[in-house]
Image (cartoon, rainbow, N blue to C red; front, side, top):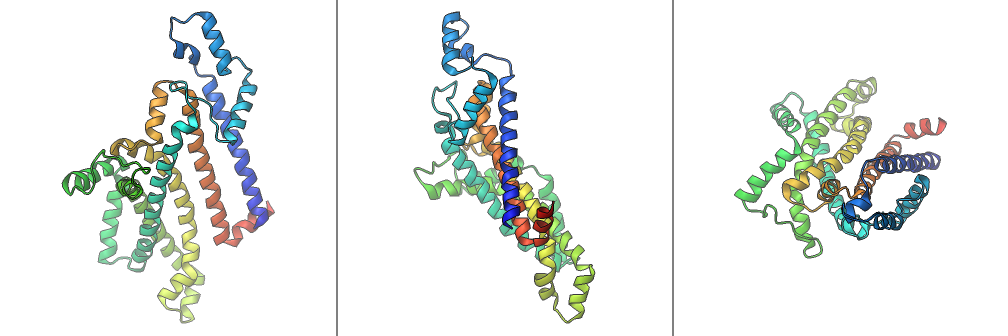
Length: 318
């Protein structure tokens, strides 16, 4: 297991290095002069040149990339062009907001989809299963932002369980902050729950048809015992991979959901920075999102190997 983990961590580091290079190179070749944008078109050439030197824009590409990479390792993403303040200070609180919202959505996905996937598989063809099929199709076809609007109308405007747009800062009231994020998390999680339930149910039914399951059943194991002791371990493997992909998608979905619920997260900062060409902020957010996705993928692989030893044996032999 240690060798497999070391290999995955090494691949994680190399992937992050490659992503950082692509991100920095992409924003370096974009048109526009940050110094000119900051000083305005009336600025003298001398002032523009002095500001470019101060901002480090005159340095060679690899010098600028190396400085940015070393700073990023200490969570120093440079200074914002628009606000003349540290990018880390500018987006630090917003990272926690998105992390909390994504964590809540993940808890909902796991807590809802795994039990319901098992339940519907045990009662396949029944009335409950047919009802869940209809509900699954409905939630799979509805985008998260529309669910967000519906949740806002039902729970915010109708039942008044929260104030739409009345975001609560976690510094002021952490319980209220978490409570406000529950509806956004549900909007993100419900389509993923529907997909996960369908996938897990299909995997359980497929595994139940295999010879090892029939053999276990013929030896006197009950349906419940066979499910939990033999089938579920194999059936849940693709679900683990899917949940890892879902978490990555939650990060992107959260950017849209923020706009629906008026949450001052990374999405709002990203859109604002793009509109003002505040490249240090954009690069930092893009890099953080990319790093989150790569790290989640690596953690998913490690969990996969922990659940199924055959995976790490194959990985170590490659």
